[in-house]
Length: 196
Image (cartoon, rainbow, N blue to C red; front, top):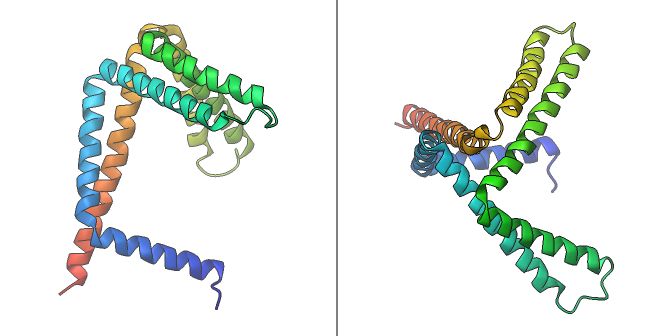
């Protein structure tokens, strides 16, 4: 007996709801911990920025070493030299991030500036494309905000690099933690009202 896509989707949703309902306290605690970590990252953005760059450096080094181990005895594999160069670059960039986290922060900030600019332009084009639809101006505002934000960050380099990554990490952790805790609390309240 095979399930249709809709039935399989409903079974999956029921399983997720049941898991959240049974373990709501763990979801709530995880959300609270994420919010606390996010608040710390927002309060101390420079420290959290350096911590992220250091973590990224170690991840690149470990990834490079793992790839190097997988290449042992594989010199006949197609594109072996390209893979070896990739391994060396991962380890080198990881070491550079650990040695000079300030340069790593500037590099990541530049990538974020490019991302905000490209996303802003894409949203702007999307908004102008759907212009007759209701509320199209919110997409336009979002695109303009992304472009303005990227320009402000560009003009603020390199000072902004010290705190930007930590601040963004903090905001993300708080938002994820809040949504998780709120979901768990809501599920608990609904379960209490349904159960005798």
